[in-house]
Amino acid sequence: MDDILFRHTAIATPNDKGDDFLQRQAEAEQDKALVNEAKQFDLDLQSVLKVDLPEDLAEKILLEQSFAVENKKTLNNRWHMAIAASIAFIIGISLPLLNNLNSLPLDIGTVAMQHVQQEYYFTAKIDEQASRTAVNAKLASYGGKVQGDLGNVFFVNYCSFEGTPALHMIMQGEKGRITVFVVPDDAGFIETPVFNNQHLKGLTEKMGNANVVIVGEKDEPLEKMHLKLQKNIQWNI
Image (cartoon, rainbow, N blue to C red):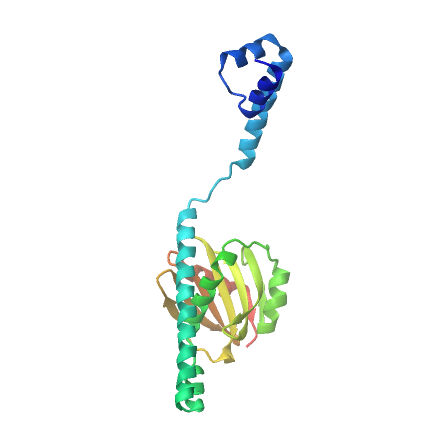
């Protein structure tokens, strides 16, 4: 085996068991050292590339795909409603009637679940390690102040809750992540104490001058998060 072929084999397939390749290693220490170096590089590379996958990865991927399908259906329904409204306007149905139909109050639970589904890819991965100071800076606008331990808060910021400025928090629950919305009480949504769909469930309670909406996956004990928020946040009344 010539030098070029030996070096190519050592780098590309250092575990080759060919007689000529093994003989070169036995005859020259520098050739053996080159092969050992290549073997160690392969081991180091495998160690870097090895990533431990979460046990529920498959379930999370399926859930995310399901949300994507449902979100597409929601967008299609809205588009069809917009087309129907345009046609109705053209054929003479009064504009005030259409406006009344479009301004019907929405179910706060349904809005919350749609919001979670639409942002699931983002919220399932984010971790900004929000501090109590950061939470209080945002929560103050809604009359709340954290005075205890909320546990891990992955994200806190303002969001548009179907057009209403609201607070959006992602927190650690017992089974997974929990989304908490703080929505102004005067936003005009239909209050739903408990709600659910195929994948999510939630509950709503008036705290101070806001509605606090808690959303999690079906196996999440939301009542524990509910008690934690009651215990550790003081609200101005």
